[in-house]
Amino acid sequence: MAGYLVEDTRKVTTHRLREMKEQGKKIAMLTAYDYTMAQIIDGAGVDMILVGDSASNVMAGNYTTLPITIDEMIYHARSVVRGTRRALVVCDMPFGTYQVNETEAVSNAIRIMKETGCDALKLEGGEEIIEAVKKILAAGIPVCGHLGLTPQSICKFGTYAVRAKEEAEAAKLVRDAHLLEEAGCCAVVLEKIPAVLCERVCQELRIPVIGIGAGEADGQVLVCQDMLGMNKGFSPKFLRRYADLHTVITDAVGQYVTDVKKATFPNADERY
Image (cartoon, rainbow, N blue to C red; front, side):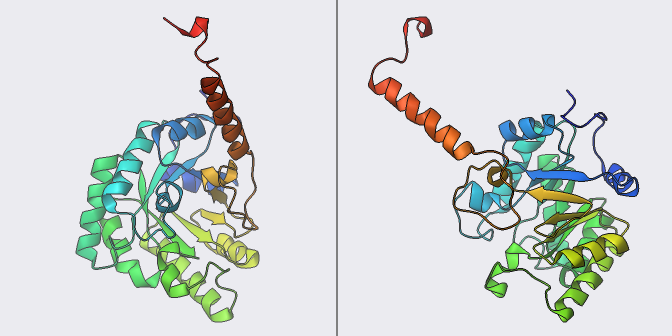
């Protein structure tokens, strides 16, 4: 079934991502961590699904993304792939799986691809991890870069504030973006940086730039639970809520509890 605004139901590939940028077609990306949500958002027409290590926060309740393991990421990604037909599925490589050395990075990347069936992997960082990126790409695995606010480095940053506001950090981000493109990355995510800097990178790169809190880009990504209003406690400036599922679900569960307590559920028609 075609999505709301999607006539082309062909599987999205890395080649089609580049094609979309060349044609000026915006790329819609959301996170998913389970089969049911993947089915819904894929059917609604998203182009890319990110199985983010944000599952550490959203699904497991951790304060940062650092605790999530490769086994947990494989579990989530495998579930999402089963529920996806059209979207290109990108899985985050979790903290510690690619920073040690290139050999370990390739081994972990191959394992994730083989055990999940996802379409690409996402790694955070630029020059610092470029050799790992090159080795993973040389193994035939598509890579999406991630620059700006990189949550796996939150202990180093010490804050979730906007990155690359100073000239030196902005210049490094631009260099890193070019390094990732030259290495062969299929796309790059820019998180929480000044809009003018994001626009510059979009203009300079041939590969798609996906923004989150970075102004206009070739595409956008949000955490699905955030944009659906399931998380009341997270309200950054860049987040637009498209629903208030926290209230909808709370009311539904509350009504269920009431019906059970009053013995009005199940009724005569709901019994065998």
